[in-house]
Structure formats: structure tokens, C-alpha cells
Image 1 (cartoon, rainbow, N blue to C red):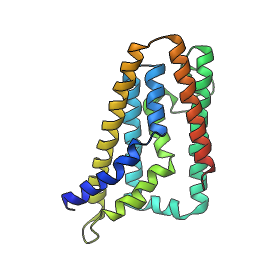
Image 2: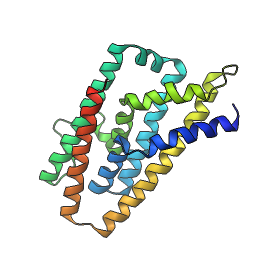
Image 3: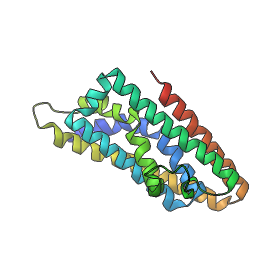
Image 4: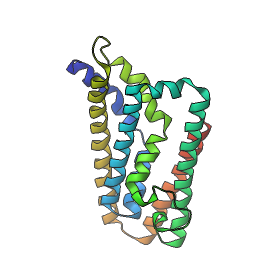
Length: 208
């Protein structure tokens, strides 16, 4: 693989990364409701979710899921339900004045992971994250060479772009919170993040 192939992939994937979506919203919510370190953990979880998709792509599972209408429907539905659950619990937490991850009732098995677990599973269950490795990645591969090392190189580039953007946004939100740190501001932003997560969940679950 030549350097210009990696550069071309970075140029193609950067605009997709900058578009506000699930990871962007989760990082915002975690920083507003918790702290800057919570946002960092959510960003790291999102990056690890991309590693899962890259692994699936390397062994061909992503292609299998995307080619099967039934399997893709299941992934979309699970991803949508998970985002809706996150959005609803985020919204409800503003009424109780506590974080949804601190509740013992209705806790998912990975809830103890906090922001990291939320970032991880939101990307693992996101078909659009997996589609990157079925659309953009193949265009950057040299088929005459081993595929797995090339996918690994592109994945490193992808994770770097995602982490740089999310960590930058984490710092921006943390600075804004420090300047306007009032209960009303936190409640408003948490409710907004909850509503966006629900909307993203509905869109994911109903996407065709």
C-alpha cells in the first residue's frame, strides 16, 4: 500500500467523521452531564468500536451482514433500540438530577463501563460505521498484496482522525461548560442530547 492511498482514504473519511452523529452527541452528553474525562472515555469507546468493524471487515463478516437483508435489519434494529434507550435515560436523568449510569434498575450489562461502554456499543451496533469498511476501504486496497495488513493501516488512520476530532470537541464542550456551568445549562444540554440520541435511534432502526 502506497502513502497516497492512505492519504486518499483520510481525505474521504474526514468529512464523514466531522458530520455530527452518535459519537459526537455521546461525547457532548458525557462532558455536560459528567466531566471532560467522561467525554474522553466515550471517544475512546467509539474508536474501539471502529476496531471491531475493521476486524469484521478483515475476516469478511461485514460483507456477510451487509449482503443479508435479515442480518442487516437485526443490526439496525438493535442499534436503534440502544440509542433510543440511551436518549430516554439521558432525558429522564435530568428530572432526577442523577446520571443514568448510576441507577441500579434497568442497567445493561455493560453500563458499568460508563462512557467507554456507550461509545463502544453505539459504534459496534451502527451499520453506517461498518459500511465505511465496505465502501471506502476496498477502493484503497492493493489486491495483489495481503489484505489484513492494509485494512489495519487504514484502520489506524481512521481511528486517528476520529480521535483527533472527538478529543478536540471534548475540549471545546468542557471549556463551554466551565464558562456556563449552571444547573439549567446542564439540564438543557442533557435534554437536547437525549432528544438527538432518540432521533438517531429511530433513524437507525427505520433506515432502509
